[in-house]
Image (cartoon, rainbow, N blue to C red; front, side, top):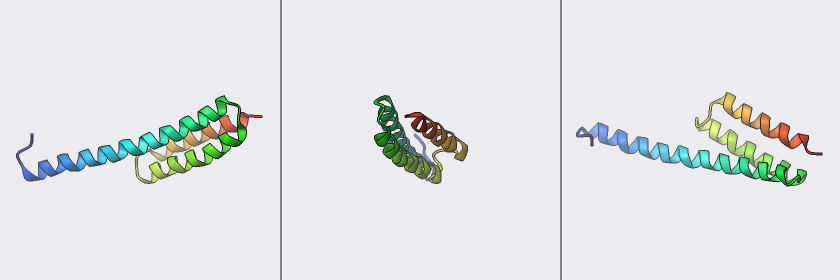
Length: 87
């Protein structure tokens, strides 16, 4: 454990940020899983509805600095292509 006051604060702050980042990442993963399950069920309407929510979560995570913008763009692109493949 750190002895210096500023080091103790850094530990607390970094833990708080890590928890927040983890929660945001978890929300994104859940949204992506919902899109994937709708695709598996071959339900285009549910998939496109879930896609809108997933893209929103991914964009929010990107604005907060959780994901790099290229990573976010790749995730959105792959999800969109998968949903558009449904007939």
